[in-house]
Image (cartoon, rainbow, N blue to C red; front, side, top):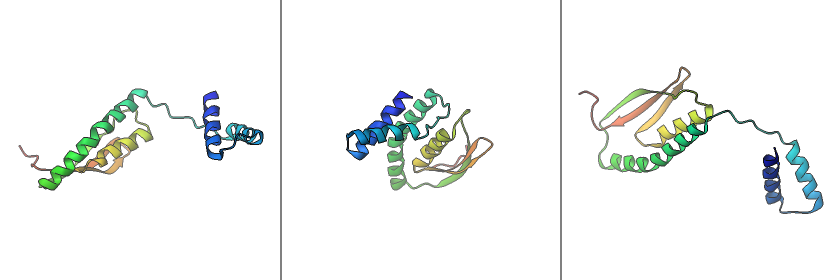
Length: 128
């Protein structure tokens, strides 16, 4: 509670650039009146996993982009990828962003039964 109050007051003072008594009183009132959002109970471990995937996705995107320029794709298909269990809507959004961020894949649809439909391009056929 106190942390949110301090954060809101700091933001208020940065926005107004005024430390007069009247502005401090207005800032405290606004800090108390603004509703507090309650975050969904996502595990910190899940967030760290997504952040690690983001760090690996950036160089992968550059490599795939250069690869598409040098050697265009010959095959494409649609695959289903399972959504990890206990995913909040924020983590699902980040998953979709990560899949779509790389040039060779794009999420076409998020299905409510726990799957992503992913369109991908490849150099070789899936036939063995």
